[in-house]
Amino acid sequence: MPLSHSWPFILEPGAIGILAMAFALDLIIGDPERLFHPVRLIGHAITSGESLARNLPLGEKTQGAVLAILFTLSVFIIVDLGVKISGHISGLLQWFISTILLYYGLSLKCLGDEAMSVKKALVKNGIEAGRQRVSRLVGRDTDSLNTVGVTRATIETIAENLVDGVLSPFFFGALGGPALCISYKAINTLDSMIGYKTRRYLEFGTWGARLDDIANYIPARLSVAVISLASPLIGGSKPWYVWKVALSDGQKLPSPNSGLPEAAFAATLGLRLSGPSRYHGKLVDRPIIHADGREPVIQDIDSAVRLLYISSFLFIGAALLLGIMASFIL
Image (cartoon, rainbow, N blue to C red):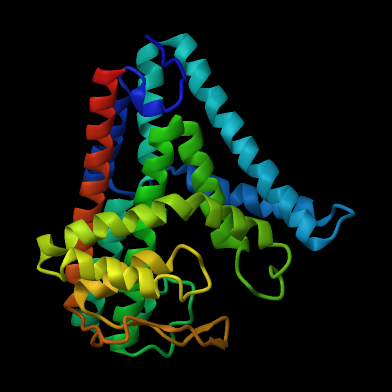
């Protein structure tokens, strides 16, 4: 039977199985670079859309707003229409397509594997290899980072992408199904491509960054809860301490969201994170997160990846359990 497209998606018959299977596929397959991925298609579409938007007879900020809003709506409509059409062909086909699209929205295994590849590069081939590998994960300049800097950048990326790559896409998938999940990925990709505070995007990228801040607002705050619960499971700090540091240091960064999981990771692992970094050749004086912590060492990447996985399992497990309970009650 085709999906009914009711909200929240997780309460539809069969939706819990679709969400669970999508998560399982991400854990098993990850994101092979040679496999087609809609996010890469989204990236190409944003590049083309930027050229069109910049030709509009409008101010740069308004041009960027037109691109961000219309592109996100277009992605939602296209994906939603595709899922609905597949349902008219076959309920089984619709379930398959929904599962694959939701799988595409998640990137837990990919993130964990990329982080561990940085550690492997540092240990086996030295600092230059580590710099090159971490440059795949971060937007900051990496050519002058030392071992501590590469390790810190890796852990910060793990913390931030717990939200961007796992919690938020699953949250929106559970709420609005594949269309909302992929629309979130479109917003996140917009931010990663045009949300930088460079001369080219300072005005044009304002709405791309703003939409990303809005979309991640709730998942970023939920991340503090799951990281706190996961902390003792990896031998980290007590949950109340993680909450305390997240609340005190989580709003120090310019982003209203990324500082929260970063501060929670720092408190859990007992580390000092953030601090001044170079972006596009310019030194950005970012505040220190969890100043009482120690400098990270290479082995802390292992602990950060374990924290990433356990936090993700707690969040997704809790969401699926609540969905099962709600389906019985309703």
